[in-house]
Amino acid sequence: MAVVNGSLINILFGTLNVCCFIIFIFCQRMEFIHLSVSIGCTLIFYLVIGFRRRITVIGKTEGDRRRDGLNEFRVEDMLQSKILHDN
Image 1 (cartoon, rainbow, N blue to C red):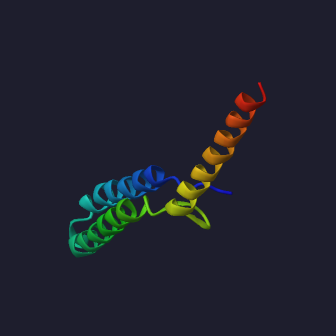
Image 2: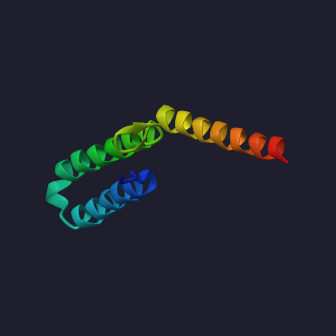
């Protein structure tokens, strides 16, 4: 399964925002377009920050991952107690 890297996406949108600023700062006539693109990139940037903790793996939410971790812990705990009990 592919892991969604939230910080990489945030860096991507932050870089896109800075690049738009650098490109459009040289085009004085396109200030309105720069403003709208910059605001759009910033909104997408903050939306990604807000949702990156909810979706950690494609097809799996954080709750599913936590539940799987607990199940693995229970299996390890059962194996450890069986080993101690057998000895």
